[in-house]
Image (cartoon, rainbow, N blue to C red; front, side, top):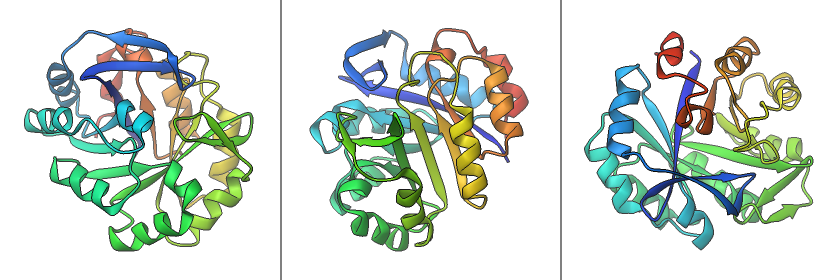
Length: 240
């Protein structure tokens, strides 16, 4: 079952989108997150990607109360990402209403700890986010590049039971230039049993259709949806 997953990137309680992961290059959207939740619910979306940008910057989650408000006014399941480094972070995020969590930098800095979470929290509960730029992994608020091969990085966790993988091409993130289809095809062929979710660059419903036809599990959408390049009614064909 293919999933379209809207994303809300939160900074200071507002919806903010970064271009290519650059905190100095932001787009702000002045609409109510609770209204957004209701809108997504009405078309059959059941999961939302909640990105705590303040948490990404700080290195630990920040926007707990925004998360709690969103969950309190919605039936959507929330997949939380942003600064998760410890079991304490995870437990607090879940306490404030998240159903799932996604982590990225910790998998680069402490791969054994992330691998242990697959067992302790269960492979249905968490996702690995791999952010890439110029074929290199980026982490630490997207400011550092790691000398780690992307496929080796994924394989390490795949061998330890990883089920859900999200991959963002940071050079395309937030700029509406289209997803990196070549990258996703390569990963789909290499890891056919991983539930692969594309993130970054989606500009139209045709991009979504192509990713679905490629056999991906899902896609994260943000700017194209906020700015009307993808209409809410367009997403009904992908509703669960």
